Length: 245
Image 1 (tube, one colour):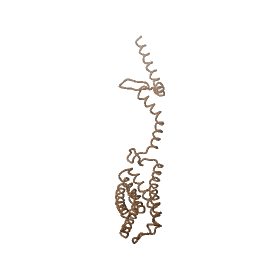
Image 2 (cartoon, one colour):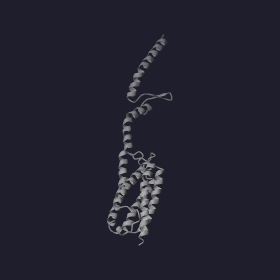
Image 3 (cartoon, helix red, strand yellow):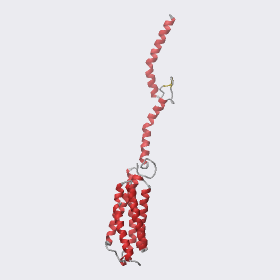
Image 4 (cartoon, helix red, strand yellow):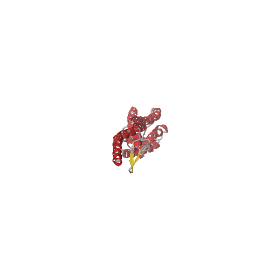
């Protein structure tokens, strides 16, 4: 009889425990202390995987906010790497880079124009001009447009490949471009100016070939520059030939 009563009491307590189990799990989950089963054993506490997941979910939105902020201010390369490259740069940074590229080229043109203005009305008028020499007023507008195109082409190549070999070629040709005016109008050396512009034409061709592998738009934008510089090479050869002294 005592055994039968003990069995009934045991079954009643078991049913009570099962009835209270959902409420206990809910309370534990609210506190981040829900029991977890690890190898057949239950484990409860802050260090349990479920408690860690609960804390991770709480921190999730805040972490996402900081991650988004980091991505906004990050300037990464075109292939996901770091560096001063535009692949994942903010639009504002890319626009400022365009202004920088075009501004640099226009600055070179303005510096050369200052030297040209002082010589074009003096020494230049004493030279024998080859056939097909354009009027003096034409050089300024044409070079202004070409310098803007040179800057845009360099910016497009930078956006696609960063500061790589193609952009270094672009920089070297711009340096030779800047050196021609001092050689011709500053030093009055037609031979030195001819050597500079011959090297410039070759370097522009190499730059266009390098740009064509990266961005065909950049290569085509440089074509008018190559044609005009080739025409300037012809004029330089004519000045050198007709003015041997």
